[in-house]
Image (cartoon, rainbow, N blue to C red; front, side, top):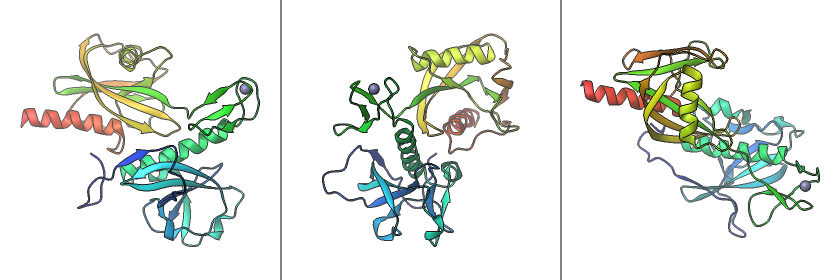
Length: 285
Ligand SMILES: [Zn+2]
């Protein structure tokens, strides 16, 4: 479920590349250029700052982000060499620090700002000829003029699958998961693959099972640094669990009412598992 303030409607965000001419921003994500830290009010949950509340800052770059409930949002980038002590009443936070506290849509907004900033800093030169790139004027890309090549923000799609078998689901402890945490299987989409093919391939590679009835669940931008998680459910079809020890430490079937530690509902994995539990609750209740 999305996190929203009690009594309020979920906010809606629409990404845009440019604002209309002379349009100023109503809200700003203030961030540092190289460390991509976000400016946050002391003692408050992170949120973009209204124009009237912006502290006086040496801005080196401004990036259009989009519309949050019809309010224009941009990112204001401050050089890292600037003295942070110059903003009384504020401190700097990492994107990961706000994952479980900021509302979903605000986390998405901050994630977009961080991803765009990383893209700009990592594509200053052409990967083909080494010439300096410049910002294109007709779309949001970095352009190498000698090559006529454009570089866009890098987004890496990943397929995630929750395999179910009656009232059980298969959860795995990946080698990079925190101690004790079990989650759905996931992997990067390979060149030339459809996300559904990735889902079936990952299941077979990681736990040696065959699945059927692959169904799309939902997707989530995961800006660490630029994944798009595309989540599915699937039904167990055949095979015995046979884990790939390079990727998976343990994989097991868990009944919906006796699950191990799973990811929080701020993540798509948490929502995917939660949705399965809710469907079992409905059928058993
Ligand atoms: Zn080039």
